Length: 286
Image (cartoon, rainbow, N blue to C red; front, side, top):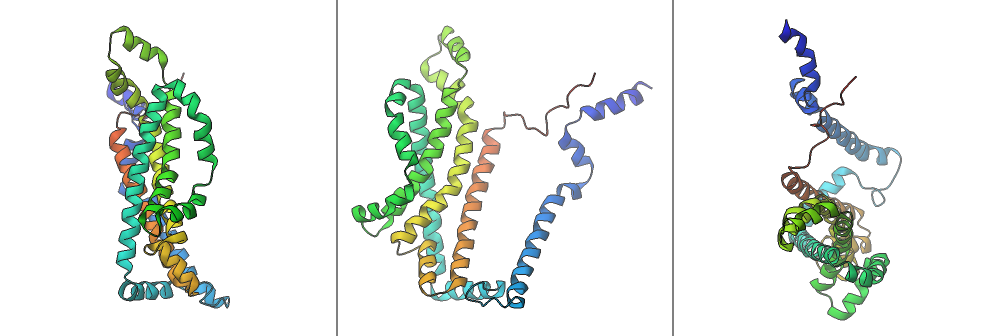
C-alpha cells in the first residue's frame, strides 16, 4: 500500500527528461524529423515553384541547377581549395579573436581603473563597423590573407570581451571577500571563483563569435580576396551566375553551423556543473 501511495508522488518528482525518455525514442526524434520534413518541403518548393511562376534561372535557380553548378565548381573552379581556405581562416580568426577577447575581458575586469580609462575607446571601436576597415587593411597589408584575418579577429573580439567583462562586473564580491579572508591567493581566487562564474558568459560570447567569424572572413574575401567562398560570390556576381552565388552562400552556412555546433558541444562539457532547466525539480505544491 505504501508503494502504491507513493508511486504517483515519486513520478511527479522525476526530471522531465526522464519522463520523456520513458515515453519512447520517437518522442525525442519528433523535432529532428519535423525539421527534416520542413527542409524537404522547402527544397521541393524551390525546385518546382520558380518554373511554375515563370521566374528565370538567372534570378532563382532550381535545386537541380545548384547541384549541377556545385559539381562544375568542384572540377573546374577548384571548389575544395576555396572551401578549405575559408574554413581554415574562419577557425583561425575565431580562435585568435576569442583568445584576445577573453584575455582583455578578464584583464579589464581585474583592473577596474584601467577599464574606466579604456572604456570610451573600447565603446568607440565597438560601435565602428568592423567591415568598413577591410579596404583600409588592404591598403596597409595588400591583397593577401591578413586583411580578412584581421577583420575576422575584430568581429569576434568584441562580443567575447563584452560578455566576459559583464560577468566580471556582476561578480559576487561577498564570495571574493570571503576567499580573501581565508588568505586565498589572487591566482586561486581567479581560478576557483572568478573563472567558473564567468564561464557561462564566455561560452555565450564564443557562440556568437562562431557565427560572426564566417561573416568577417566573407567580407574580407568579398572586398579584396583572391581565394575563398567570398571570392566565388564576387566572381559569380560578375558572371551573373546566380547558382554559384547560392552554392557559395550555402557552404558558408555549413561552416558557420559546424563551428556553432562545435562550440555548443564544448559548452555542454565545460558547463556540466550548471543545472539544466529540464532536470530542475518541479515546484512544490501546497
